[in-house]
Image 1 (cartoon, rainbow, N blue to C red):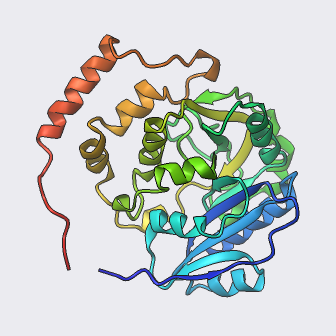
Image 2: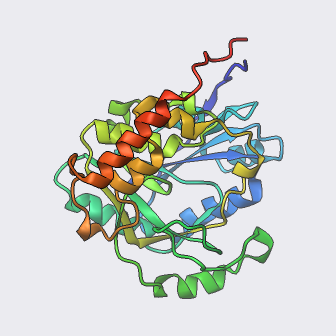
Length: 304
């Protein structure tokens, strides 16, 4: 069992910063540079950027220090959940945003999110930007194919900037995955990311379910907020946790049932309706999930 060594650095937060953007990064320096530079160049407003450096032996730690970025650091890869919770300790704005290091923001991405926040009556919301990806992955909220490069070496930034706004995409239901934003008081209310899901598979729907349990009902993807995503440049190197089983065991339903039938992921937002416990489709899914739950292995966590 590794110990999570913590090192943190607080830089100078830009005056008027609106979002605190948490970016976990694991030896992915070329993509991290591209991500941070896009935030600096294409955001309408100033933001606090907080990087959690996992390992950092590729030069990431040296680079974030040179850039005087707020950061936390662990000498080993501690995964997304610990990284996000460590990053939260440095947050100095009202809003916590989560972004992957293999994302590139498009101009106006932050304005669209902040305008939606300003129009809401309270803090109980969870918003996502809309991703453009180079190839389809059967994810309804994603704009794909929108191929501007599958690797950093063939990334066509100029073409992306010319064309990103031309794709039709209305607001959609079911914000779960990054890039996303939540009020820090609501983040703290639910306790941030659940470390039992380390290194992080299914931690996104788990966080969304905790928000649902806390009374959040405004799960909205903002169609005008656009971010290009290279698709899983770090996840392919990680040994996954059994997230699907963990989610089912914890919540009594699968993440698919939650995102598909409760949050109604990908449905036009104006068509979202509160889930009806008497709906036969939802009831059948619940019964099936309860049956599946009975056959989960009853094992204790490994103790070392």
